[in-house]
Length: 193
Image (cartoon, rainbow, N blue to C red; front, top):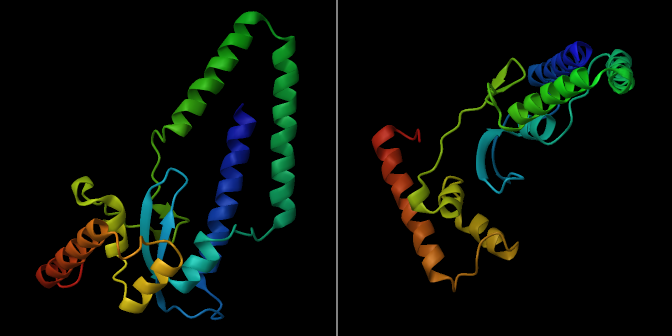
């Protein structure tokens, strides 16, 4: 089990270093600011404002470690250790089997529940700033409003079936109210929401 922990740490560190290298940049992609709307697997709507390079090279692609051979070798060692653990578990006493299964189950539940997890850092040079929307304001309209879309962008969202048709008056009223509220908030905070 200790080997799998060490292997995971090495793999995580290799991916973090790859992301850090991307953020140092090679000048191929401009650092212009873009707005991105993402729906997570859990159904949460996320609005992201960042540079095009971060979106294309960090958020939408898998990092490529500097030393792919060492990375693959580390993964192979992890799988071999898992195989050895499985075989030795089958040959051990019932008490050891139960304890091992309990440790694996408890640690898996803790990972899934994100106990002790800090999702804000991405590598060591990039950190996400999270602001949750008020549940009462309607999550989708609020998330879309934070994009600060132009009329043309709204029309594109309708054409791509990401926004409801304009005949859905209730939704559009909630969306417009949130856009106005963000505008008022910008006036009070100087543009920082």
